[in-house]
Length: 158
Image (cartoon, rainbow, N blue to C red; front, side, top):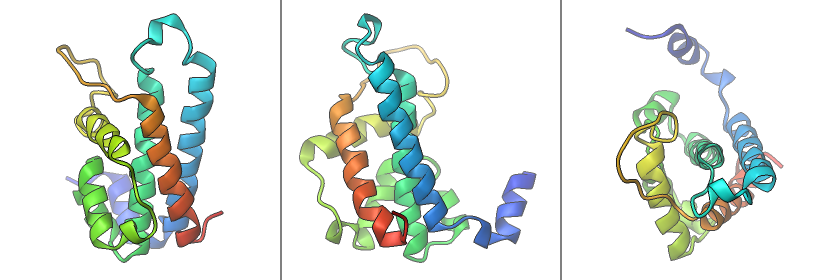
């Protein structure tokens, strides 16, 4: 059964644009950085970054990648099929020549992979027990900044 929001997005696809997604992506990354500036140095967040900071950064990356994919011709229905899988979004974006706009370092890709394990399975949304692998925050932020600094002008957002 489709939710009302799913029906609305399908009926009026022009209400979700690559520019709008890029704007939200930029704002989520700025919020992650601002939050980390406020709470990141607190002892309880060492050596693991704050979960809300990781969530905001991951959501920013998801929106940035989906902005690129939408701009390159993917439909909203196709974007929904990716779910929240950052690696799947990145792989498809690279097939559509994202790698012509931006090159990521291996440590940034490794951080994205660790982040994706948590984000795509909603482990940053809900508490789940067990051992987890958390990424180092700096390469996550570097990935997000590089991504948005390349994608935003490409799709027509500042």
